[in-house]
Image (cartoon, rainbow, N blue to C red; front, side):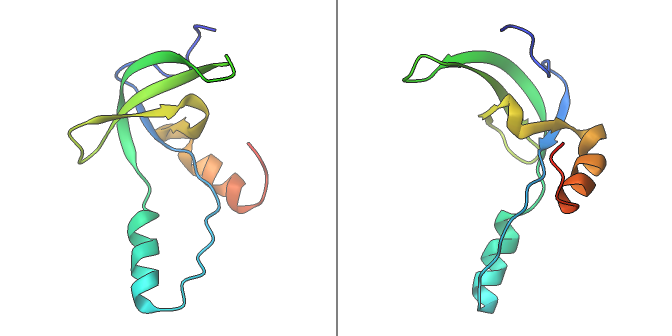
Amino acid sequence: MTDFKFQPGDRVAERPRVKLNIASTAQGQAVFNRHSKQRYGTVTATTIRVNSKGSKRKVILVQWDGSQQSSEHEQMRLCAIDDLPKLTQSTLNGHAA
């Protein structure tokens, strides 16, 4: 369980996903747009966490561009920046990649 997809120093992005916006006002639309921007960052560390059921999860610490702190994300929610265009198109077409 120690083979991580990403290593410290790798550039990553949040994996694309379909987001539904049901905002009916301009203010609601502005909030949705502010929270739905694509994030890019650099891997700072990798670790394994054990959840309450005892399952091991691969966790990546990412320092997002424009942020001073690293945040934890499961490996499956990230992708390499080079893979982002292909994954985005696949997501828009409704295919799992």
